[in-house]
Length: 298
Length: 263
Image (cartoon, rainbow over all chains, first blue to last red; front, top):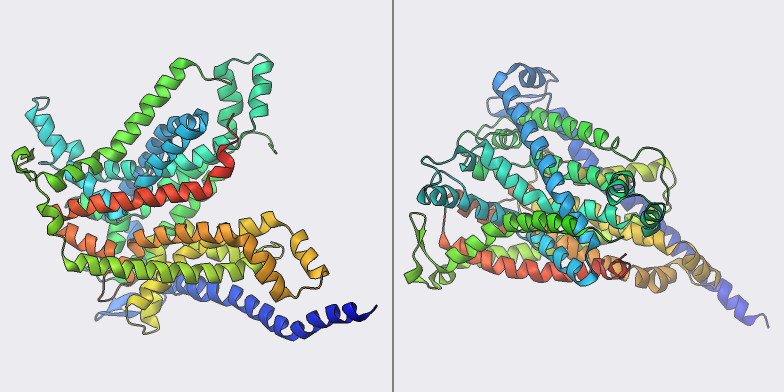
């Protein structure tokens, strides 16, 4: 009667040496790859930010001059300020406008909801450059919008708001990043248990009251994700300002990009990037503070 | 709870506005693919498909390259993140938390930073920019997405299935092959599609890491800096078709189970 047991015991024993090796290699992969692909490059990046360019070569002598320049150079300061304004404005507009759309998605029936989801997902999956290109078609002094406004006699001069400038960057980012606001907010709305809303309704709360005391606070996690997503993507972008910023629409991302191209000042570009990382970190830290009052678990 | 009629009207209006903003430019580009424009005015009497014929072989090559990079990068990212997820799924310990932090870092930070960090590292290591560096960049970016999807599924599965399999005498390898992997399949498929879509569209990192050969977004970037061209409008038509199919597919993969529980 003991025969099958012998067999059973044998299998794991046979496999154990091979398995031990397999599991060890798994641990090695788990540690080495993220360190080599992510931690290493970020550390090197950090070190380079303390260097300088001498005779078109990067010399690393651990000086702070790049960081001093960020704080001292008024042009850089202005660009950083404008980038922050664009980022905050984009995040706020996307979230404010995205919320109602997410809410509609939540209350629709299954079929219409899926259709709406597809409608928001298609632009999300479309090539980013192509989307910006299509928006750029409309902008500009001679762009379709200004052309239309002038031809219809609504304005006599092309509106600056629709030109290739800071405004153009803001408009393009807002239109491109809108789906990034809708989906996180929808997911948080979708997670709210129907029982909570029903309980509030049974207890006689008005619709407005249910929204502001139950639904909105519980959707704040999604709002936070929406704000950070759109903000981080907006300030980190260099493709949009490069394509629709015109000659003056410089943003932080665009200056960083230029340091690695024509500007050829890698250490300064690295220092600006570290600065950008700090901004992103602060934004993420602030976002974790957006949450419903009290502890909610379900 | 049913929403008031007036609320629904307002919600619909805002949503319609968003869709107009999202699709207006795209539709505009599609029209310009068929109808030439001169001085901001459509020439309706010159409708043609000339723009489609002007798409040259260069773009097709770039497209092929992008598909290859997307396929290879997604496969590698999936394999690596499955390995890491198997190790990290229990979630305990500082080391595991640290790995998770590292994997999510390129996802949380703007892509330009990841791209530049890799660019500088490759240069320090004397690795010339090529398709290989692009591939490494893509894998780095995709790890977070793939890892997240797989580890979520692994945690949902719970330990009991694996324990049952081991108790019944299967080796760990057998358990992985016959129990874990089949359970992971939907998650693997979903994250492959997602990774592929992201890789296909990835421009910022690619632009920084690319050598001679340019992928599709990089090629488009080059074309666009030169200005307006009808062949780009023609490409918009193709891309819209592809992304529609892709998003239908993705929503099917991710949504069906949840959407039935509508209040």
